[in-house]
Image (cartoon, rainbow, N blue to C red):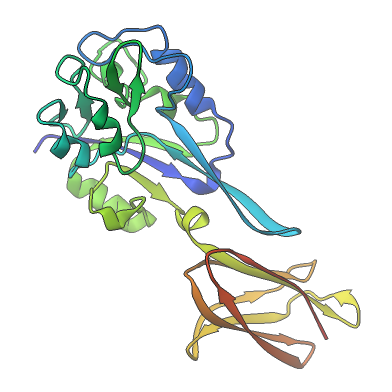
Length: 276
């Protein structure tokens, strides 16, 4: 197998600046890339879409962002449903044939990630090509898609490597597929994905009315300690990456102890201040 192309996105460093989105627009709006894709419409298409999720409640809340291009899946549902109109290149990039796909609006619904868009004027389905026309060009010195090249925070990285090398990187860096349960084996992988897909429990500790630093807080489930934290200068603690379920929060502050049971059901929890 030849080297495969991958995009890795670190959720922790995405700040919703939309430079990736603008790079995609700059590259594809009003530009027909013969043999790759037709021009992207000015409005309505988000080949690099940025999903947003707010977690928690003031004042212990955050907002996380998930850049979402075509996932370039090895087991792509769109390829299976396209009757040859969508194919996967030897390097892993999934491409829509602009001729074979013409008039086939059903292709839009074949993607479980919502990454395929319909161009009414051209009567074709379109999506992210991973800027294949640039990657195939000897004149494009950066050798990466425009979205990756435009990212100012280092949230996005591009790899052209053997699958075994990517598997080692994924294991070492904790990379995950979004919606892994779909079994699509995508070539877009995420680091710190839990910050978008999972929830947290957060709170603060006060002793005699003042914020208490270095209190020991533990998170348990079914009698097993999952995480331990020390409160910061403001008395705050936070346990992240949690699935739905029942948990116990135990606090030891100034020689005093408290415990409380909490339930996560689809959203993060701000416990407020726990007073001693």
